[in-house]
Image (cartoon, rainbow, N blue to C red; front, side, top):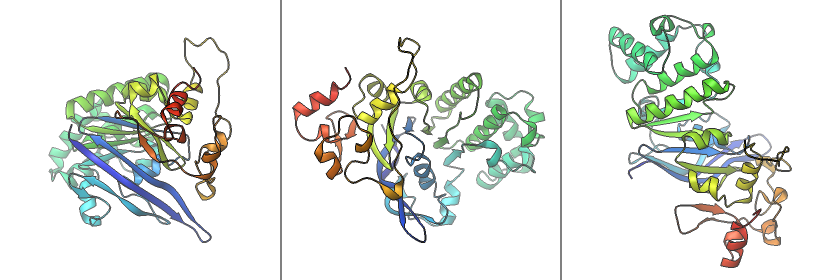
Length: 334
């Protein structure tokens, strides 16, 4: 498959008066054309900062300090801001986590949609209006001409989210980054949004980078899954392998803490402890204070992201030492 995006050793730090905080610490992955890749993990693991870094939307005191973001042969971390603006919203679009705060409350929906089309597609106002209403219809909004003349506060949460999707897809982007697109939506609207995104992916052949902590959403839409913890990728696998045979203890913990309809147990199994602060990470493996299978080396040295011979990768000492440890790790909890 053709690579749409390649992220190589991306590092984003935040600078304060007292310390340097590494929020994204050496993240690498690729997204193929037409593929949906999900980044999952608890709050504070670096998912959203990774997406903002790709879009070059990290504000001061944050800064991309190392790594490459290769899109169509260009390193987005090296190009000028003018060139990045021509890509942002045109070739790469983003759906932000909270649509109400992302939309201008005093500007009508139609005008906000038109701005993107006039800027990037060089359409006239009349053509932009026609295209905007067409996109509002495309995302399943009833009475699109009325929505076009409405203000954001006049719409429900699900309708605003659909407007954001319409805005993101108005220029037929090659890559769509969706940061928690179904957060705070009821399950009915969530299902509609996911169906909509899958349909638009097929219609426009758009690659999708989905940022979420909801494994149900991942199972519904993703082709590949990247699990992040404490600013690093700890596991990468296709969606079927991840759910059938999770390798990293953290991934196993995430799946065990997710309710299942066919599970006879009443209680979930939460992962003990919390994601460590980026400013105060433990030595060795960042997950070792919460890991039920911790070994002496886990407390001393950080493991590498190891290929397992297929397309899957894992960052864990259980997979680096020998085949006996590999067998043990694959059978944890069975």
